[in-house]
Image (cartoon, rainbow, N blue to C red):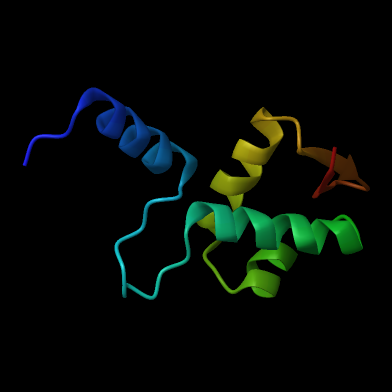
Length: 89
């Protein structure tokens, strides 16, 4: 099946935004994980490990998504008494 240009563009955008996830995989989309991170950061600044435990995922996943949130200006990493914390920007 050949996609027209508009369908192809929409599919690329969905994949880039993390909206595409094959059905019935049991996996969370990138947006769901980022939403969970933002929800946790609304409570208070947290370390990567605290976020990892709060949303039940791997440390590298938290780091990648927090970095993405930092890149788009939603979250920032701050150092307090030698420990890195993430907080909403």
